Length: 604
Image (cartoon, rainbow, N blue to C red):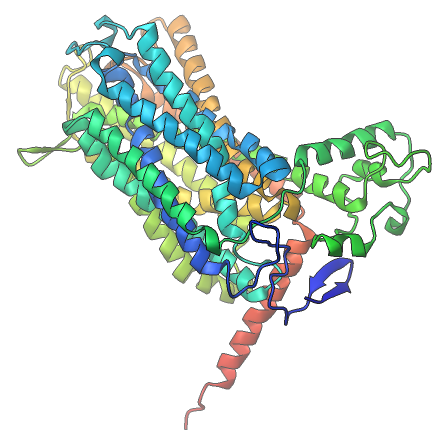
C-alpha cells in the first residue's frame, strides 16, 4: 500500500487493494476493500436498525397512554415523564461516543451497550406483565382519582426505562457511524455511495418505526401490554444477533483518544497564551510532520483564519512542549470544527421540541376524537405516528431518486442542494405544521363547545383523521431536517471525532425533549396562576384546555428559530477536506454527463 503526500494531506494510492482511510479488522490489521465493508457489511447494520427501531418505538410511541391509563398520571405529568425519558435516550449518546472514541472503539462499545439495552427491555416487559408491579385497574374518567402507583411500581418501571436509556447511549452514536465507516472517504466511488447511505439509513429506521406504530401499538391497545412489550424485546434480541453475524465483514476504526481531552487541551493552551501574538504566516505555527499522519493513516489539516484566538494554542513560544501548552495545527482545526458546528446544533433544538409533540400531546388529542373505522375496528391514537413514517419513507425515496437528480442539473452539486439548505427547508415545514396544528385544535375545541363536551371531557364527534395533516407534514419535515442533520454532523466532524459528531444530532433531540418539558411545565404553571377565566392551557381534560394557544406559541418559537438559523448559516464555513471531496464528486458528475453527451446519436 503506497502513500503519497499532496497539498498537506495523506493520500493513499488509488490502485491499492486496501482501504485508504485507516480501516482495520478487529485485530488491527489493514483490510482489503474487496473483503470487507461497502453495502455487504452495511446490510447487517441496516437490518439491525429495522428491528432496533421497532423495539424503541414499540415502547415510546404509546408510553404516554401507559402512564395515564395504567400508572394513572395526569396529562402534563405524563407528557413530561415521556419527554424527560426520551430526552435522556438522546442525550446519553454523547457519553457513548466518548467511550467509543477514547477507549473501546465503536464495535465493542456497541456490543456492551446493546446487552444493557436488552436487559432494560426485559425488566420493562416484566414490569408491565406482573400484577404485583403495577397499580390495580381503574375506569375513572379522571385518572387523578385512581390509586397511584407505589414507590416499588415506579422504581421498577422507571429503573427499567432508564437502564434502557443507558444502553441506547452506547448503541445510537455508534451504529450509524459503523455503517458510514464501511465506505472509504478517500475512494471517490465509495464516497459517492456514502451520500446515499444516510437516506437509506433513515429509510430502514422508519420501516421499523412503521411496524411499531401500527402492529405493536394495536396489540398494546387491544390485546395487552405484555405481548405489546414482549415482541419488541424479542425483536431487539434478534437485531443484536443479526449485527453480530456481520462481524467478519465490518471495517473498524481504531480508538483515537478522547475528543473532549484533545479539545480541552486546545482551549486551555489558547487561554494560557492569551497574550501571545499569532504569526501572520501559518507555516510558523507548530505542526507534526506529514510522515506522522501517514503512519497513522490520518489527515493533516491546514490552518484556517476562523476562530483565530484558538491558533494561539499552536504558537511555539519555546518555553514548553507540554500538550496543555502547545498543540499541533491539525488538533486546533479539529477543535475549531466541532465548535463551529455548535450554533447549527443550537438551531435544531426548537424543531426537536416539535418532534416531541408526536408521542405526547398529538396522541392525547387523538384520544378525544372518533377513532372508529366501520363497526368493529378502532384506530389506536398512537398509530397516527405511522403516517409520519409513511410520509418520511415516501419523501426520502422521492428526494433521493428524483429531487437530487433534478437539482444536480441546476446547482451542479452532487447532493443536489447543500445539507444546510435541506435543513432550512425542514425548519420552514415545522412552522407550517404548528400553524396547521393550531387551526385544527381551534376547530376541535369549537365542535366540543357546540356539543356541550367541554366540562365532561366526552368524545368529540370528529374523525381522528383531522389530525392527519400535522402527522404527514412531520414526516416530510423529517425527510429534510432529520436526515440532513445526521449526515451534516457526521460529514462535518473531523475524521477522529466521527462518533462525537454523530452524537451531536442525537443531543439535539435530547435537549429538544428537555426543552419541551420546560416549555410545557412553564406554560402550564403560568396559565394556571394568571388566568382568571380559565384553569390553564393544558389540563387533564383537553376539551377544557387551550392547546390551540400552546401550538400558536410553538409556531412563533419556530419562526424565531428560523431567523436564528439563517443568521448562523451565513457565517458557517464547511470543513475543508469535505469541500475537496465534494469537488472530486462534482468533477466525476461532469465526466459522466460528458460521456452521456458523446454517446448521443445525432438525428438525421
